[in-house]
Length: 155
Image (cartoon, rainbow, N blue to C red; front, side, top):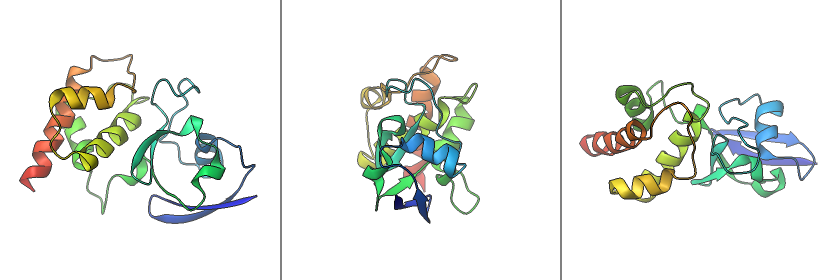
């Protein structure tokens, strides 16, 4: 069955079973490898994408639910060769280690800052609570999101 959606500003049509996981469609059919298979149960956040601006675990979403939607993966954050402020802050703050969880953190942070341009550190921590990292402490990740907030305000 064909499903149509916009992925990183590019219209897509995919022929997939209605209950195919969005994660699998993105990775296998569209070769969009930013979302990672972590737990497959919506517990780790490695597969996070933005669907119509909301951070969602793509391993829990059947492709039928995104028909007509706008989807952003980590590949779609940078614009015109310039990193999104959240991506730049992760680099600047050394917030990424192995990279498995990083796309999910970046997209969750982007959704938070789009919804709440002035979150407190506690609100940042709460928003990121659904994303797990086994390589590093969360302090640098929280610092990076707060740094991105400051960078966006100075633009």
